[in-house]
Length: 391
Image (cartoon, rainbow, N blue to C red; front, side, top):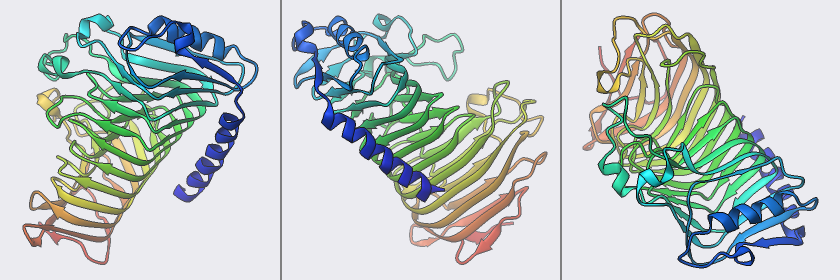
């Protein structure tokens, strides 16, 4: 699956690149009144409106310099392919209240053949927000904005962009089809709460490649309805690793199907490769066709983990086992060092045990010694070397 998707992505990349090179309609925000060290919300909105209405491929340009930006929602459909080229640095308001509780600071939605590129930085200036983030324990907490929201984009590319210090998740992907992230740099301190790198939900054929992600939460996470997702050549850390889930908490969740994670390195993360589902709910769904291969771990806690008793901050009861069925999962050629003695923990549901799980050549050490493997409610196929099995 990953090879086919990579070819599709490369073809799409060339196709969009040909559009970019042929673009003749440029919409520079400075022609709309944008000035360095000033708010450019109105200028960017007006430039987008004109570019989106162009019947030939167009480009919105934010040149080098530092600019301020309030919340902005740039929507299609546009009449032709459109590129937003950001060469400068864009700053969000430091005060979270100035974003009026919106879900995302910068939103792009309902666009076909969209490109965001240019090597620029979107700085969420999240430090003030992190200090007051009590959402883990307070259900009525103030909503904090993510840096980006990409919703209902088709055949699109996000390339050479830096997302820095988001107040919440960095990137949220919803309802997208054939969306590729190339050479993304996402960073926030390890102590920044809930700053997931890229979260994907109800989207198909999303590719994340050649990127560096270090945050205070999951580097990449898959929510319900994620299908045919490919993660290639990603460096993850600090953070909580690469996660499927959490799943099983909310009604009407859709299955997660088709994930390939390959040629990635995780360093100093709290978890490695993880599938997590909630117990104590009546939500019935499934996770299938999850494949992890050629992964390097460097001082990673819980390098390989299936956790079907996921219940942070005691928000649930474990009276009933998870009803999320996990099938067809493989871990191949996983090597490196663990920060704990536990190399593999497969803690599956007693209600719907994991099936067709394969462990193939897992070489993980802890302080120079072999790590351990423990299985509950699953009988994986073991090929080659694996950590020491525990009763």
